[in-house]
Amino acid sequence: MRKLITAITLILLSFISSAQLLANDSLPLLPAITLNMADGSSVHTQDLLGQPYVLHFWATWCPYCKKLQPALEKIKHKGLKVIAVSFEENDDATPAKVISDRGYTFKTAIKADAIAKQLGIRGTPTTLFINKAGRIIYLTNTSNPEDENLHVYARTLLHEVSN
Image 1 (cartoon, rainbow, N blue to C red):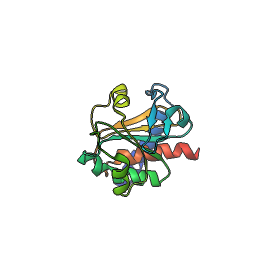
Image 2 (image 1 turned 90 degrees about the horizontal axis):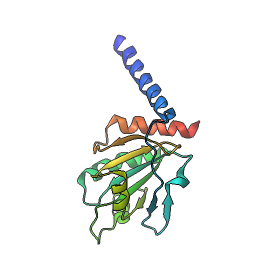
Image 3 (image 1 turned 120 degrees about the vertical axis):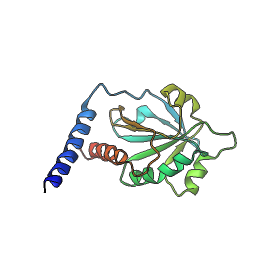
Image 4 (image 1 turned 135 degrees about the vertical axis):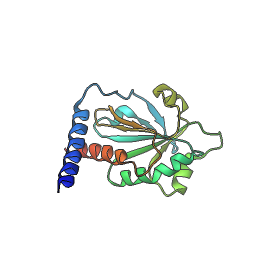
């Protein structure tokens, strides 16, 4: 019984600390960027203000990205926008086709090397969880689809949607 109470307390504390993070103006603000999408459209992060989302920086050749992407697809199906941002690719790479062939449905931004450099992203995978105010509440380089932090921060962002 004592272990159960301790576990419940820890879970509640994680949600409270996540909620406090969302209200904290000291979190880094994602600068305004324009993502060039594989379908020829553009996504401006300023247009995403008011809704939380995930940016997943990856490359088609990255085995660690491939390992992580099933978890991101699950997060998307729970109602959170996920954008795969391809960078460090060969000229003949087809990131949107690779995502589709893997059975994933998130949108794909392409040729984002300059954006990755601007944001200081050096490796794949790098995944950012961005709240509705445009602040980065979590940045990770994990490739572990079972990493509990992925799911905790996804739930935190989804809680923003319901409020």
